[in-house]
Image (cartoon, one colour):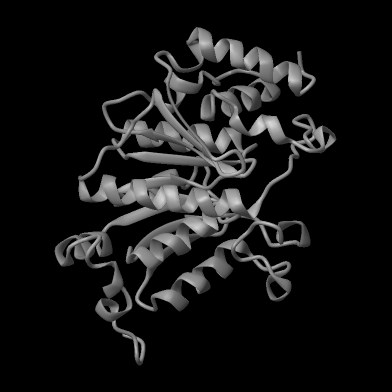
Length: 287
């Protein structure tokens, strides 16, 4: 134990919203997070402050100036440093007793088994365009009965989907396997937020270019995502509270002060999602 650190005192203010026994349960659960960039870094730090003590984290990237607007570990002192190392240091600064398994090559087919060893929950922090890695990760979770949470930062809001063992899988919902990358991007976007609340206030459409794998982002969205993901993690790991699983989805938009709860049986096969895919493709210049 680090000098001056006490787990029970550090996280004592959680007690009330969770019981002392539940805090111990959270302490002993292991969460895997792939991606330590936009949302992944905030997921890790938020869960560390919730008192979760065991993590498997993966990222192959380093910090750069373009990350400053939204990423938890991005700053002048961390430019060119591996994201996974920086966030591990930040987590240990919150809880020196953190048990962190670090994967600096990112998550891939070769290390999937090790990355998910003894994991109780997966939270997605992968880059929006990391389609191959995301498909592999969610397929592994489905095959091994690991609950998986994805919360996407869209505009100035957050879009939540939960994939729970025995329920609808990522592929069943999104229907992306074998499709061209641009079509995957649109299907992922629409599947995450079928009502597309965020599209109404995009100020400069030229900043969205799926072909070049780029789009705008905000810090508000990333921080909202972390709060939503940690709340879902608490409910799943403690087995209390309602967890809406796919094909249910929830999007909250802070700019519009709107909340949308969607239910799309069949996922992207659903006629409403098919229409939204057509609309999104038109707005993004792909149709």
